Amino acid sequence: MSEKAISILWGISFWSLLSYLWIDWETLSIFAVVLFLDFVFWIIDVYLFDKSLITSKKAWRWLLNKITKLLLPMIVVIVLKWVWFKEMDFLISSIMWIMIVSEWYSIIWHLYSINTWKQLPEIDAFELLISKILSIFKNVIDAFLDDIDKEKS
Image (cartoon, rainbow, N blue to C red):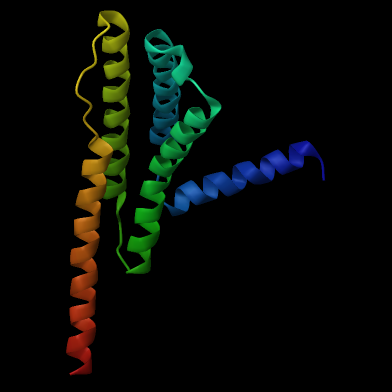
């Protein structure tokens, strides 16, 4: 199979996945650009403060962190589809935009650090988002299990 055919198949698969997960291409593109900018400014920030901190291990760790952030909305959709939720456009869009805003904060944090040589306190909006999602899932699962117990009684 040619490289062009493989590229087309990957593209179709990716678009199908986004469609299934209710993630629009524009939002995902914005998130990807913001992630890239955050990476660039992270490297500049670390380079200016301590060049020895730039290692391939830290870069891979940063990349893994960002990939897991990208997987979060996909996991949320798959789980909610599994429990028969319908029309989650608003929820998925909200998650994506919270993650975008979180990355913008990180970029601003790095720019401030680069320009003033001072570190701002880091706020992890992603951690807050995950804790909220986990509490929502816990409530949904508890309600689901209660319904099953009521049906058995």
